[in-house]
Length: 500
Image 1: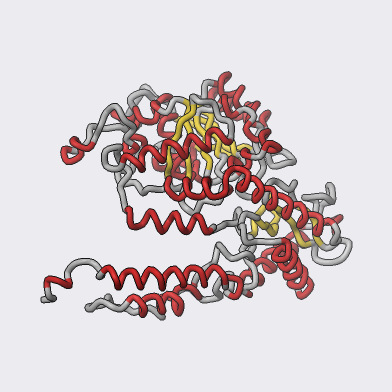
Image 2 (image 1 turned 45 degrees about the horizontal axis):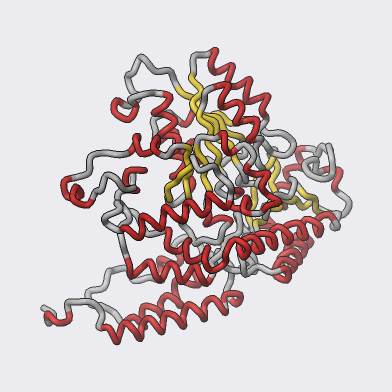
Protein backbone atom coordinates (compact mmCIF):
# COMPACT_ATOMS: atom_id res chain seq x y z
CA UNK A 1 0.00 0.00 0.00
CA UNK A 2 1.21 3.51 -0.74
CA UNK A 3 2.58 5.63 2.06
CA UNK A 4 -0.28 7.53 3.70
CA UNK A 5 1.44 10.86 3.00
CA UNK A 6 1.13 10.16 -0.75
CA UNK A 7 -2.65 9.63 -0.61
CA UNK A 8 -3.59 13.29 -0.70
CA UNK A 9 -3.56 15.62 -3.70
CA UNK A 10 -0.59 16.65 -5.84
CA UNK A 11 1.94 18.52 -3.65
CA UNK A 12 1.46 22.32 -3.90
CA UNK A 13 4.83 23.13 -5.48
CA UNK A 14 4.46 20.37 -8.05
CA UNK A 15 0.93 21.53 -8.85
CA UNK A 16 2.18 25.11 -9.27
CA UNK A 17 4.79 23.92 -11.81
CA UNK A 18 2.11 21.99 -13.68
CA UNK A 19 -0.15 25.04 -13.79
CA UNK A 20 2.64 27.15 -15.29
CA UNK A 21 3.34 24.42 -17.83
CA UNK A 22 -0.35 24.25 -18.70
CA UNK A 23 -0.57 28.04 -18.99
CA UNK A 24 2.28 27.99 -21.51
CA UNK A 25 0.61 25.12 -23.37
CA UNK A 26 -2.69 27.03 -23.64
CA UNK A 27 -0.96 30.22 -24.79
CA UNK A 28 1.10 28.30 -27.37
CA UNK A 29 -1.97 26.42 -28.61
CA UNK A 30 -3.88 29.65 -29.12
CA UNK A 31 -0.95 31.42 -30.74
CA UNK A 32 -0.21 28.58 -33.15
CA UNK A 33 -3.71 27.28 -33.85
CA UNK A 34 -3.54 28.38 -37.50
CA UNK A 35 -0.73 25.89 -38.10
CA UNK A 36 -3.08 23.00 -37.24
CA UNK A 37 -5.42 21.21 -39.59
CA UNK A 38 -8.95 22.44 -38.98
CA UNK A 39 -10.21 18.83 -38.99
CA UNK A 40 -8.56 15.41 -39.16
CA UNK A 41 -9.00 13.08 -42.10
CA UNK A 42 -8.99 9.91 -40.00
CA UNK A 43 -11.32 6.98 -40.47
CA UNK A 44 -13.62 6.05 -37.56
CA UNK A 45 -11.67 4.14 -34.95
CA UNK A 46 -8.25 5.42 -36.01
CA UNK A 47 -7.79 7.60 -32.93
CA UNK A 48 -8.99 4.91 -30.55
CA UNK A 49 -6.51 2.49 -32.10
CA UNK A 50 -3.65 4.75 -30.97
CA UNK A 51 -4.84 4.93 -27.36
CA UNK A 52 -3.94 2.49 -24.58
CA UNK A 53 -6.45 -0.35 -24.46
CA UNK A 54 -6.16 -1.01 -20.71
CA UNK A 55 -6.52 1.44 -17.83
CA UNK A 56 -3.26 2.30 -16.00
CA UNK A 57 -2.35 0.51 -12.80
CA UNK A 58 0.12 3.18 -11.70
CA UNK A 59 -0.22 6.92 -11.93
CA UNK A 60 1.62 8.71 -14.73
CA UNK A 61 3.47 12.01 -14.79
CA UNK A 62 1.53 15.09 -15.90
CA UNK A 63 4.24 15.91 -18.44
CA UNK A 64 3.69 12.53 -20.13
CA UNK A 65 -0.09 13.03 -20.14
CA UNK A 66 0.22 16.53 -21.63
CA UNK A 67 2.62 15.17 -24.24
CA UNK A 68 0.01 12.59 -25.23
CA UNK A 69 -2.59 15.36 -25.53
CA UNK A 70 -0.31 16.95 -28.13
CA UNK A 71 0.46 13.67 -29.84
CA UNK A 72 -2.92 11.89 -29.78
CA UNK A 73 -5.76 14.27 -28.94
CA UNK A 74 -5.02 17.56 -30.70
CA UNK A 75 -4.43 15.95 -34.15
CA UNK A 76 -7.72 14.04 -33.81
CA UNK A 77 -9.93 17.05 -33.17
CA UNK A 78 -12.12 19.32 -35.25
CA UNK A 79 -10.82 22.67 -34.06
CA UNK A 80 -13.95 24.75 -33.68
CA UNK A 81 -11.81 27.66 -32.48
CA UNK A 82 -9.65 27.65 -35.64
CA UNK A 83 -10.06 30.88 -37.66
CA UNK A 84 -10.79 28.77 -40.77
CA UNK A 85 -13.63 26.91 -39.04
CA UNK A 86 -16.69 28.35 -40.80
CA UNK A 87 -19.21 25.65 -39.98
CA UNK A 88 -22.52 25.86 -38.15
CA UNK A 89 -22.83 29.33 -36.55
CA UNK A 90 -19.12 29.81 -36.33
CA UNK A 91 -17.64 29.30 -32.90
CA UNK A 92 -15.27 31.10 -30.66
CA UNK A 93 -13.03 30.70 -27.68
CA UNK A 94 -11.81 33.96 -26.22
CA UNK A 95 -9.08 34.58 -23.68
CA UNK A 96 -11.61 35.78 -21.05
CA UNK A 97 -13.67 32.64 -21.71
CA UNK A 98 -10.66 30.39 -21.12
CA UNK A 99 -9.81 32.26 -17.92
CA UNK A 100 -13.38 31.90 -16.73
CA UNK A 101 -13.35 28.14 -17.31
CA UNK A 102 -10.01 27.82 -15.50
CA UNK A 103 -11.30 29.74 -12.47
CA UNK A 104 -14.52 27.72 -12.24
CA UNK A 105 -12.66 24.37 -12.15
CA UNK A 106 -10.90 24.75 -8.75
CA UNK A 107 -14.02 26.32 -7.21
CA UNK A 108 -15.95 23.18 -8.28
CA UNK A 109 -19.24 24.18 -6.65
CA UNK A 110 -22.70 22.70 -7.08
CA UNK A 111 -25.13 25.54 -7.83
CA UNK A 112 -28.24 23.53 -6.95
CA UNK A 113 -29.48 25.64 -4.03
CA UNK A 114 -28.69 29.07 -2.69
CA UNK A 115 -27.13 27.67 0.48
CA UNK A 116 -24.84 25.20 -1.34
CA UNK A 117 -23.30 28.17 -3.18
CA UNK A 118 -24.76 31.63 -2.54
CA UNK A 119 -22.35 33.36 -4.94
CA UNK A 120 -23.10 30.93 -7.78
CA UNK A 121 -26.86 31.38 -7.36
CA UNK A 122 -26.78 35.15 -7.10
CA UNK A 123 -24.28 35.56 -9.93
CA UNK A 124 -26.44 33.39 -12.20
CA UNK A 125 -29.43 35.59 -11.35
CA UNK A 126 -27.38 38.71 -12.12
CA UNK A 127 -25.99 37.48 -15.46
CA UNK A 128 -29.45 36.39 -16.59
CA UNK A 129 -30.73 39.89 -15.83
CA UNK A 130 -27.80 41.56 -17.62
CA UNK A 131 -28.71 39.74 -20.82
CA UNK A 132 -32.39 40.56 -20.27
CA UNK A 133 -31.50 44.25 -20.05
CA UNK A 134 -29.30 44.12 -23.16
CA UNK A 135 -32.08 42.62 -25.30
CA UNK A 136 -34.81 44.80 -23.69
CA UNK A 137 -37.00 41.99 -22.39
CA UNK A 138 -39.73 43.16 -19.98
CA UNK A 139 -39.03 42.66 -16.27
CA UNK A 140 -41.78 40.02 -16.16
CA UNK A 141 -39.26 37.68 -17.81
CA UNK A 142 -36.81 35.83 -15.61
CA UNK A 143 -34.61 32.92 -16.52
CA UNK A 144 -32.49 29.92 -15.71
CA UNK A 145 -29.25 28.68 -17.25
CA UNK A 146 -29.12 25.25 -18.89
CA UNK A 147 -26.49 23.66 -21.08
CA UNK A 148 -28.20 23.91 -24.50
CA UNK A 149 -31.33 25.23 -26.18
CA UNK A 150 -32.64 21.69 -26.67
CA UNK A 151 -32.81 21.25 -22.91
CA UNK A 152 -34.40 24.68 -22.51
CA UNK A 153 -37.12 23.89 -25.06
CA UNK A 154 -37.84 20.62 -23.24
CA UNK A 155 -38.45 22.55 -20.01
CA UNK A 156 -40.56 25.24 -21.70
CA UNK A 157 -42.79 22.64 -23.34
CA UNK A 158 -43.14 20.80 -20.04
CA UNK A 159 -44.76 23.94 -18.64
CA UNK A 160 -46.88 24.30 -21.79
CA UNK A 161 -48.02 20.70 -21.34
CA UNK A 162 -48.97 21.31 -17.71
CA UNK A 163 -51.07 24.33 -18.65
CA UNK A 164 -52.76 22.48 -21.50
CA UNK A 165 -53.23 19.31 -19.44
CA UNK A 166 -53.60 20.20 -15.75
CA UNK A 167 -52.13 17.59 -13.37
CA UNK A 168 -49.92 16.10 -16.12
CA UNK A 169 -47.02 16.53 -13.70
CA UNK A 170 -48.71 14.23 -11.19
CA UNK A 171 -50.87 11.93 -13.31
CA UNK A 172 -49.10 11.92 -16.67
CA UNK A 173 -50.93 11.66 -19.99
CA UNK A 174 -51.43 7.93 -20.48
CA UNK A 175 -54.92 6.52 -20.10
CA UNK A 176 -56.59 9.86 -19.46
CA UNK A 177 -59.92 10.05 -21.26
CA UNK A 178 -60.20 13.72 -20.33
CA UNK A 179 -57.32 14.70 -22.62
CA UNK A 180 -57.06 15.00 -26.41
CA UNK A 181 -53.83 14.50 -28.35
CA UNK A 182 -51.70 17.61 -28.40
CA UNK A 183 -50.03 19.32 -31.31
CA UNK A 184 -46.85 21.42 -31.50
CA UNK A 185 -46.13 23.59 -34.55
CA UNK A 186 -42.80 24.85 -35.85
CA UNK A 187 -41.35 25.75 -39.23
CA UNK A 188 -39.75 23.32 -41.64
CA UNK A 189 -36.50 25.24 -41.05
CA UNK A 190 -36.52 24.85 -37.26
CA UNK A 191 -34.20 22.71 -35.18
CA UNK A 192 -35.32 19.17 -34.32
CA UNK A 193 -35.32 19.96 -30.60
CA UNK A 194 -39.12 20.13 -30.78
CA UNK A 195 -39.36 16.48 -31.79
CA UNK A 196 -36.90 15.43 -29.08
CA UNK A 197 -38.90 17.32 -26.46
CA UNK A 198 -42.15 15.75 -27.70
CA UNK A 199 -40.60 12.28 -27.40
CA UNK A 200 -39.43 12.95 -23.83
CA UNK A 201 -42.70 14.55 -22.72
CA UNK A 202 -44.96 11.78 -23.98
CA UNK A 203 -46.56 13.98 -26.65
CA UNK A 204 -45.04 12.01 -29.49
CA UNK A 205 -42.83 12.88 -32.41
CA UNK A 206 -45.74 12.56 -34.85
CA UNK A 207 -47.55 15.40 -33.11
CA UNK A 208 -44.91 17.95 -34.02
CA UNK A 209 -46.15 19.52 -37.24
CA UNK A 210 -43.74 21.25 -39.60
CA UNK A 211 -45.10 24.41 -41.21
CA UNK A 212 -43.86 25.31 -44.73
CA UNK A 213 -41.98 28.58 -45.16
CA UNK A 214 -42.22 31.57 -47.48
CA UNK A 215 -39.61 32.79 -49.97
CA UNK A 216 -37.40 34.08 -47.16
CA UNK A 217 -37.59 30.80 -45.20
CA UNK A 218 -39.95 32.25 -42.58
CA UNK A 219 -42.93 30.34 -41.22
CA UNK A 220 -45.94 30.84 -43.51
CA UNK A 221 -48.69 32.21 -41.27
CA UNK A 222 -51.62 31.44 -43.59
CA UNK A 223 -50.63 27.78 -43.72
CA UNK A 224 -50.11 27.63 -39.95
CA UNK A 225 -53.63 28.96 -39.36
CA UNK A 226 -55.09 26.34 -41.71
CA UNK A 227 -53.14 23.55 -39.98
CA UNK A 228 -54.38 24.63 -36.54
CA UNK A 229 -57.98 24.87 -37.76
CA UNK A 230 -57.81 21.44 -39.39
CA UNK A 231 -56.31 19.88 -36.26
CA UNK A 232 -59.01 21.34 -34.04
CA UNK A 233 -61.67 19.98 -36.38
CA UNK A 234 -60.03 16.54 -36.18
CA UNK A 235 -60.08 16.54 -32.38
CA UNK A 236 -56.47 17.53 -31.67
CA UNK A 237 -55.58 20.29 -29.22
CA UNK A 238 -52.95 22.82 -30.38
CA UNK A 239 -50.57 23.13 -27.45
CA UNK A 240 -47.61 25.24 -28.57
CA UNK A 241 -46.03 27.11 -31.45
CA UNK A 242 -42.24 27.36 -31.64
CA UNK A 243 -40.96 30.39 -33.56
CA UNK A 244 -37.31 30.70 -34.54
CA UNK A 245 -35.15 33.82 -34.54
CA UNK A 246 -32.11 32.56 -36.42
CA UNK A 247 -32.92 29.22 -38.06
CA UNK A 248 -30.28 26.52 -38.33
CA UNK A 249 -29.76 26.67 -42.10
CA UNK A 250 -30.33 30.30 -43.04
CA UNK A 251 -30.64 32.29 -39.77
CA UNK A 252 -34.08 33.47 -40.91
CA UNK A 253 -36.51 35.02 -38.41
CA UNK A 254 -40.14 33.92 -38.22
CA UNK A 255 -42.97 36.55 -38.16
CA UNK A 256 -43.03 36.77 -34.38
CA UNK A 257 -45.37 39.76 -34.10
CA UNK A 258 -48.04 37.84 -36.00
CA UNK A 259 -47.33 34.72 -33.97
CA UNK A 260 -47.79 36.67 -30.73
CA UNK A 261 -51.23 37.70 -31.95
CA UNK A 262 -52.01 34.11 -32.88
CA UNK A 263 -50.99 32.99 -29.38
CA UNK A 264 -53.79 35.12 -27.89
CA UNK A 265 -56.33 34.10 -30.51
CA UNK A 266 -55.67 30.37 -30.27
CA UNK A 267 -54.70 30.20 -26.58
CA UNK A 268 -51.49 28.31 -27.33
CA UNK A 269 -48.04 28.54 -25.77
CA UNK A 270 -45.58 30.63 -27.81
CA UNK A 271 -41.92 29.72 -27.47
CA UNK A 272 -39.22 31.68 -29.31
CA UNK A 273 -36.04 29.81 -30.14
CA UNK A 274 -33.61 32.72 -30.39
CA UNK A 275 -30.62 30.54 -29.57
CA UNK A 276 -28.59 32.16 -32.36
CA UNK A 277 -30.41 35.37 -33.23
CA UNK A 278 -31.06 36.51 -29.67
CA UNK A 279 -27.50 37.68 -29.10
CA UNK A 280 -27.72 40.06 -32.06
CA UNK A 281 -30.48 41.95 -30.25
CA UNK A 282 -27.80 43.76 -28.24
CA UNK A 283 -27.22 45.79 -31.45
CA UNK A 284 -29.57 48.78 -31.81
CA UNK A 285 -29.84 48.08 -35.54
CA UNK A 286 -31.04 44.53 -34.80
CA UNK A 287 -33.71 45.41 -32.23
CA UNK A 288 -36.29 44.42 -34.85
CA UNK A 289 -35.51 40.80 -33.97
CA UNK A 290 -37.21 41.29 -30.59
CA UNK A 291 -40.47 42.70 -31.95
CA UNK A 292 -43.26 40.59 -30.49
CA UNK A 293 -41.09 38.97 -27.83
CA UNK A 294 -43.10 40.52 -25.01
CA UNK A 295 -46.09 38.49 -26.24
CA UNK A 296 -44.27 35.15 -25.87
CA UNK A 297 -44.42 32.70 -22.99
CA UNK A 298 -40.79 31.59 -23.20
CA UNK A 299 -37.60 32.54 -25.06
CA UNK A 300 -34.23 30.82 -25.46
CA UNK A 301 -30.96 32.73 -25.98
CA UNK A 302 -27.62 30.92 -26.29
CA UNK A 303 -24.70 33.22 -25.40
CA UNK A 304 -22.44 30.37 -26.51
CA UNK A 305 -23.64 30.96 -30.07
CA UNK A 306 -23.45 34.72 -30.49
CA UNK A 307 -22.22 36.36 -27.28
CA UNK A 308 -18.78 34.71 -27.12
CA UNK A 309 -19.36 32.48 -24.07
CA UNK A 310 -17.75 29.02 -24.35
CA UNK A 311 -20.03 26.00 -24.69
CA UNK A 312 -22.20 25.37 -22.81
CA UNK A 313 -24.41 28.29 -21.74
CA UNK A 314 -28.06 28.65 -22.71
CA UNK A 315 -30.68 30.81 -20.98
CA UNK A 316 -34.39 30.01 -20.90
CA UNK A 317 -36.48 33.11 -20.17
CA UNK A 318 -40.09 32.73 -19.15
CA UNK A 319 -42.83 35.24 -18.48
CA UNK A 320 -43.56 34.50 -14.81
CA UNK A 321 -40.79 32.01 -14.05
CA UNK A 322 -42.84 30.68 -11.13
CA UNK A 323 -44.73 28.60 -13.72
CA UNK A 324 -41.54 26.66 -14.37
CA UNK A 325 -40.82 26.16 -10.68
CA UNK A 326 -44.34 24.84 -10.03
CA UNK A 327 -43.78 22.09 -12.61
CA UNK A 328 -40.38 20.91 -11.37
CA UNK A 329 -40.12 21.67 -7.65
CA UNK A 330 -40.32 18.72 -5.26
CA UNK A 331 -39.78 18.24 -1.57
CA UNK A 332 -35.98 17.96 -1.28
CA UNK A 333 -34.36 14.66 -0.28
CA UNK A 334 -33.67 14.44 3.45
CA UNK A 335 -29.97 15.09 2.95
CA UNK A 336 -30.78 18.43 1.28
CA UNK A 337 -33.36 19.71 3.75
CA UNK A 338 -30.81 21.68 5.75
CA UNK A 339 -29.44 23.28 2.59
CA UNK A 340 -32.75 24.53 1.20
CA UNK A 341 -33.82 28.06 2.08
CA UNK A 342 -37.38 28.57 0.92
CA UNK A 343 -37.18 32.35 0.66
CA UNK A 344 -34.31 32.18 -1.86
CA UNK A 345 -33.99 30.97 -5.43
CA UNK A 346 -32.90 27.34 -5.54
CA UNK A 347 -32.14 26.61 -9.18
CA UNK A 348 -32.56 22.87 -8.73
CA UNK A 349 -36.31 23.63 -8.55
CA UNK A 350 -36.34 24.96 -12.12
CA UNK A 351 -35.49 21.82 -14.05
CA UNK A 352 -34.59 18.16 -13.98
CA UNK A 353 -30.99 18.72 -12.90
CA UNK A 354 -29.96 18.50 -9.29
CA UNK A 355 -26.21 19.01 -9.71
CA UNK A 356 -25.48 22.21 -11.64
CA UNK A 357 -22.20 23.70 -12.84
CA UNK A 358 -21.19 27.27 -12.01
CA UNK A 359 -21.74 28.35 -15.63
CA UNK A 360 -22.48 31.98 -14.82
CA UNK A 361 -18.90 32.70 -13.74
CA UNK A 362 -17.40 32.48 -17.23
CA UNK A 363 -20.21 34.61 -18.71
CA UNK A 364 -19.70 37.25 -16.00
CA UNK A 365 -15.96 37.40 -16.71
CA UNK A 366 -16.51 37.68 -20.48
CA UNK A 367 -19.22 40.32 -20.24
CA UNK A 368 -17.07 42.42 -17.90
CA UNK A 369 -13.97 41.98 -20.06
CA UNK A 370 -15.65 43.02 -23.34
CA UNK A 371 -18.62 45.09 -22.22
CA UNK A 372 -21.66 45.50 -24.43
CA UNK A 373 -19.70 47.74 -26.80
CA UNK A 374 -16.98 45.13 -27.26
CA UNK A 375 -19.48 42.36 -27.89
CA UNK A 376 -21.42 44.57 -30.32
CA UNK A 377 -18.28 45.55 -32.25
CA UNK A 378 -17.37 41.89 -32.76
CA UNK A 379 -20.88 41.01 -33.91
CA UNK A 380 -20.83 43.90 -36.39
CA UNK A 381 -17.55 42.65 -37.81
CA UNK A 382 -19.04 39.20 -38.40
CA UNK A 383 -22.04 40.79 -40.12
CA UNK A 384 -19.66 42.83 -42.28
CA UNK A 385 -17.67 39.73 -43.23
CA UNK A 386 -20.83 37.79 -44.09
CA UNK A 387 -21.98 40.55 -46.44
CA UNK A 388 -18.51 40.84 -47.96
CA UNK A 389 -18.52 37.10 -48.67
CA UNK A 390 -21.96 37.46 -50.25
CA UNK A 391 -20.58 40.19 -52.56
CA UNK A 392 -17.81 37.84 -53.69
CA UNK A 393 -20.44 35.23 -54.55
CA UNK A 394 -22.51 37.75 -56.54
CA UNK A 395 -19.43 38.69 -58.55
CA UNK A 396 -18.67 35.10 -59.62
CA UNK A 397 -21.12 33.76 -62.21
CA UNK A 398 -20.34 30.18 -61.24
CA UNK A 399 -22.01 30.66 -57.83
CA UNK A 400 -25.24 32.09 -56.48
CA UNK A 401 -26.65 33.07 -53.12
CA UNK A 402 -29.25 30.56 -52.01
CA UNK A 403 -30.95 32.62 -49.28
CA UNK A 404 -30.93 36.18 -47.97
CA UNK A 405 -27.82 36.85 -45.91
CA UNK A 406 -28.83 36.93 -42.25
CA UNK A 407 -26.57 37.88 -39.37
CA UNK A 408 -23.37 35.83 -39.81
CA UNK A 409 -24.75 33.09 -42.06
CA UNK A 410 -24.34 32.76 -45.85
CA UNK A 411 -25.91 29.94 -47.91
CA UNK A 412 -24.69 29.58 -51.48
CA UNK A 413 -24.52 27.13 -54.36
CA UNK A 414 -22.02 26.21 -57.06
CA UNK A 415 -23.68 26.05 -60.46
CA UNK A 416 -21.24 23.78 -62.24
CA UNK A 417 -19.62 26.19 -64.68
CA UNK A 418 -19.76 29.66 -66.26
CA UNK A 419 -23.03 31.54 -66.72
CA UNK A 420 -25.23 28.82 -65.24
CA UNK A 421 -27.40 30.90 -62.94
CA UNK A 422 -30.43 30.19 -65.09
CA UNK A 423 -30.52 26.57 -63.91
CA UNK A 424 -30.36 27.17 -60.16
CA UNK A 425 -33.80 28.45 -59.29
CA UNK A 426 -33.24 29.08 -55.60
CA UNK A 427 -31.36 32.32 -54.97
CA UNK A 428 -30.59 35.53 -56.85
CA UNK A 429 -31.13 33.97 -60.23
CA UNK A 430 -34.92 33.90 -60.15
CA UNK A 431 -37.35 31.14 -61.12
CA UNK A 432 -35.10 28.90 -63.19
CA UNK A 433 -36.03 25.23 -63.18
CA UNK A 434 -33.22 22.67 -63.58
CA UNK A 435 -33.89 19.21 -64.94
CA UNK A 436 -33.74 16.40 -62.36
CA UNK A 437 -30.47 15.17 -63.87
CA UNK A 438 -28.91 18.64 -63.68
CA UNK A 439 -30.21 19.22 -60.16
CA UNK A 440 -28.82 15.88 -59.00
CA UNK A 441 -25.44 16.62 -60.55
CA UNK A 442 -25.30 20.04 -58.87
CA UNK A 443 -26.28 18.52 -55.52
CA UNK A 444 -23.41 16.05 -55.78
CA UNK A 445 -20.97 18.78 -56.81
CA UNK A 446 -21.86 21.05 -53.90
CA UNK A 447 -21.67 18.20 -51.42
CA UNK A 448 -18.35 17.06 -52.86
CA UNK A 449 -16.85 20.55 -52.61
CA UNK A 450 -17.65 20.71 -48.89
CA UNK A 451 -16.40 17.19 -48.24
CA UNK A 452 -13.12 17.77 -50.10
CA UNK A 453 -12.44 21.06 -48.33
CA UNK A 454 -13.15 19.56 -44.91
CA UNK A 455 -11.00 16.51 -45.67
CA UNK A 456 -8.14 18.79 -46.73
CA UNK A 457 -7.92 20.29 -43.24
CA UNK A 458 -7.51 23.79 -44.71
CA UNK A 459 -11.00 25.02 -43.81
CA UNK A 460 -14.30 23.68 -42.52
CA UNK A 461 -17.74 24.38 -44.03
CA UNK A 462 -21.17 22.82 -43.60
CA UNK A 463 -23.72 21.78 -46.19
CA UNK A 464 -27.48 21.96 -45.94
CA UNK A 465 -30.62 21.54 -48.04
CA UNK A 466 -33.12 24.22 -49.00
CA UNK A 467 -36.16 23.27 -51.04
CA UNK A 468 -34.56 19.95 -51.78
CA UNK A 469 -31.30 21.38 -53.13
CA UNK A 470 -27.88 20.80 -51.56
CA UNK A 471 -26.02 24.00 -50.68
CA UNK A 472 -22.81 25.15 -49.10
CA UNK A 473 -23.04 27.23 -45.95
CA UNK A 474 -20.68 29.27 -43.80
CA UNK A 475 -21.23 30.73 -40.36
CA UNK A 476 -19.12 33.55 -38.93
CA UNK A 477 -18.74 33.81 -35.18
CA UNK A 478 -15.07 33.30 -34.34
CA UNK A 479 -13.18 36.33 -33.02
CA UNK A 480 -10.01 34.95 -34.64
CA UNK A 481 -11.51 34.93 -38.16
CA UNK A 482 -10.38 37.96 -40.16
CA UNK A 483 -11.09 39.20 -43.68
CA UNK A 484 -7.82 37.58 -44.75
CA UNK A 485 -9.01 34.19 -43.47
CA UNK A 486 -12.34 34.60 -45.21
CA UNK A 487 -10.69 35.51 -48.50
CA UNK A 488 -8.46 32.47 -48.20
CA UNK A 489 -11.53 30.29 -47.63
CA UNK A 490 -13.24 31.77 -50.70
CA UNK A 491 -10.14 31.01 -52.79
CA UNK A 492 -10.15 27.42 -51.53
CA UNK A 493 -13.84 27.09 -52.45
CA UNK A 494 -13.23 28.49 -55.95
CA UNK A 495 -10.18 26.30 -56.44
CA UNK A 496 -11.96 23.14 -55.32
CA UNK A 497 -14.99 23.92 -57.49
CA UNK A 498 -12.76 24.46 -60.53
CA UNK A 499 -11.07 21.09 -60.02
CA UNK A 500 -14.48 19.42 -60.00
